[in-house]
Amino acid sequence: MSLIEDLNWRYAAKKLNGEIVPQEKVDYILEAARLAPSSSGLQPYRIFVITNKELLEKIKPIAFDQGQITDGSHLLVWAAWDGYSHNSISEVFEKTTAERGIPKETMDDYKTRLWGMYEPLGSDWHATHAAKQAYISFGLAIAAAAEQKVDSTPMEGFDMNALDELLGLREKGLKSVVILPLGYRDTSGDWLVNLKKYRTANDEFITELK
Image (tube, rainbow, N blue to C red; front, side, top):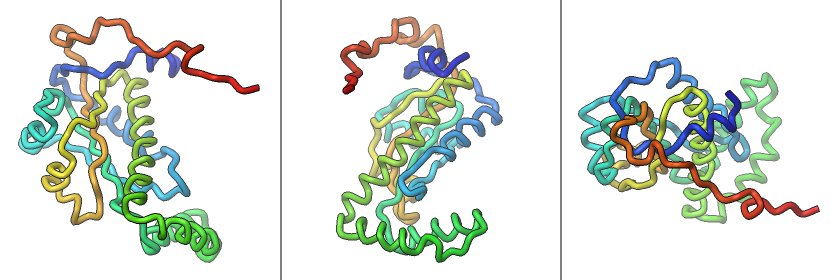
């Protein structure tokens, strides 16, 4: 199937049936998320994969009792850096140059310019920018899940501070941004499953400037 067909197939499943997603499909989805582009290649976020049932039961009330948290197979949590620093940027660039087999000094000028732009913008801008990068990865994970015929439910509806505390994210310099339960739709119990997909029409959604 084409990507467009896959995206037409997918929807935000409202009820999952508890069936376990094969590990190779989860790995595929995570690899798509890992390969996502990010600003300056920094990847200022991490993904937590949660299958522990006791932990998922604790997360469910944090996510306003949405059933997909516990009825799904895996819960993916995107957690973004809580800010940028000269050290965090340097660490990524050093790993990049090492992987490419080029002198680490190759990116020094760019690193200096980048930190010169980022530093004065402040912590709120840093956190927002890092979260935006996480969303690019998040979007590719959703598309990859659809390609694998795995249902997913994008969620911003959760108490981020409570989830950060539960998962110990602050100590890691991270903030939860968005979560994604994976699983398989319960066709008998999901009110949305048979409803026609609606998206804004092309002529309203797209403006061509020639």
